[in-house]
Amino acid sequence: MKKYPTLTSACTHSLPGLLFLVCCLFSNVSAAAQDSITVRIKGMRCEECAHNVMVAVKKLPGIESVRSNIERRTTTIVYDRAQTCADSIEARLAATGRYKASAYSPNDTIRRGMGLRMDDMHCQRCADRIMAKLQPMEGIDSLAPHLDKNYYFIRYDANRTCKADIKAALAELGFTPVNYYSGPKVSYAYYLLPERQATQQTLDDVLIIDGVEDVNVNPKRKSLAVTFFTDETNADKLLTDIKAAGIDAQVPPPHECKEEGKGKSE
Image (cartoon, rainbow, N blue to C red; front, side):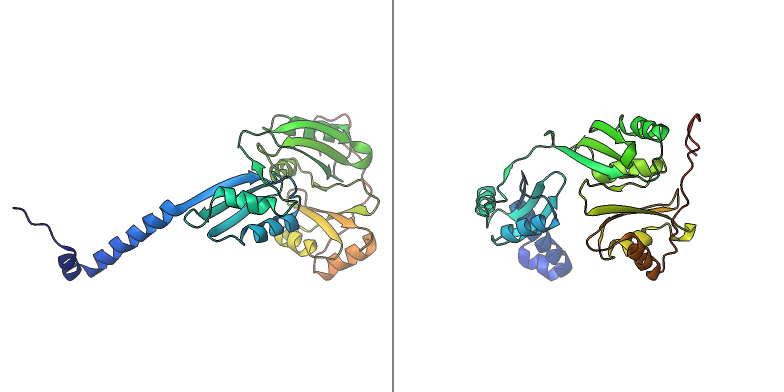
């Protein structure tokens, strides 16, 4: 009769091999016990909300990770199903009152709207170029330019595209979009930068200045755009703080549009 090696003989001949086998067995058991759920949470509208959702869910045993997407109002929770389950997670969220979970599908249509201010959008030809660029993008629902206030209102499906992708498409055209709001306590600033400072580092440095709500840097145009709160700062103080951060930002001269009657942007 053919003899098979026993566990004892395997230990004797290859302890490292046995340890590898044991690790693999435990890894497989752990992976088998892991599950995930993605839910819609309509009451989750900001980073603070996402943090509150994470804190609430992590009070349950067996929660391994919690990741939220603010645009989609979704949260993906990875958990150990030996310790908790989807029903318990949904019940925990319902108990918060504000963050009740509902079903989510990648096929859902999740409509979002946003305004983007672009001080480098100067005329109808600029607006037409933006329209031609964004309209073919998957997920774009409608576009409305407002040249008198230098902003575009964009409605889109957050399950098909996102704000970051839309901003990136505009940057490729040479524009510098930042968040637009209609409220009286919000204003905007636009500067030109030396090429060496038209970088992500400049964006990060300006974003932490008091009163700043949104920042964008366009390396192609060598520009810096800022949305800021007027009850926390003003245009003069903002520029002073930017320069104090070592950024040589310059207010551009009044724009003289050179695009009217041309076939392309300057």
